[in-house]
Image (cartoon, rainbow, N blue to C red; front, side):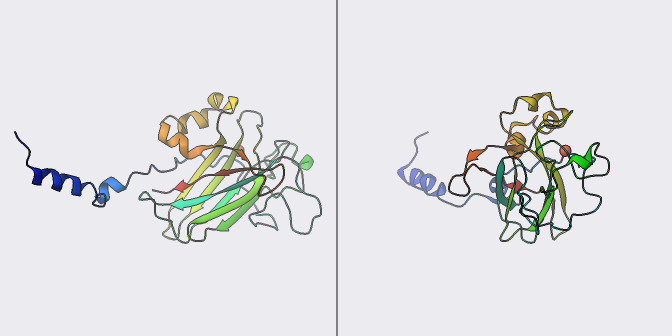
Length: 208
Ligand SMILES: [Fe+2]
């Protein structure tokens, strides 16, 4: 059938219209993963978003500094207001500050181990450590997000390309879907503008 010039003009104009809402909801949620056994039983005295520096201590934590930042988004890509973001992880020797942690007394007391912050305009940021492996697990950072609407997401972030990832059952289960994998793999880059010797990564957290 011959297409009229008018029909072509209409078709061209249609592509400039905003996406239909169902098409715009294109983001995939950050996959839920186990909290694991090391969520703090008691929060440390200092719970701010700089885990490398404990308030009142001169020493900085051992390990490579990692600036972790991003946004908390809904499935439509809109910033989520009033989201509390928590992270926790082991120190540079693989030791958590937790009663169930064997060798806890050897932990680096200059590492805060846990931090939290209220996202502002959906944005969060932490100064923490590049995570390290410990027996049975590939390097990871635990994350929990509580939204003002009562939503709760518990997940973990990993280092993209880390050889141990594919041997880690928790990682494999969460990364089975390639789009979910993007949500949990941190791509680390040097961050000389932020801090000498430090790394940086951006991880948006998408809550369903
Ligand atoms: Fe862990």
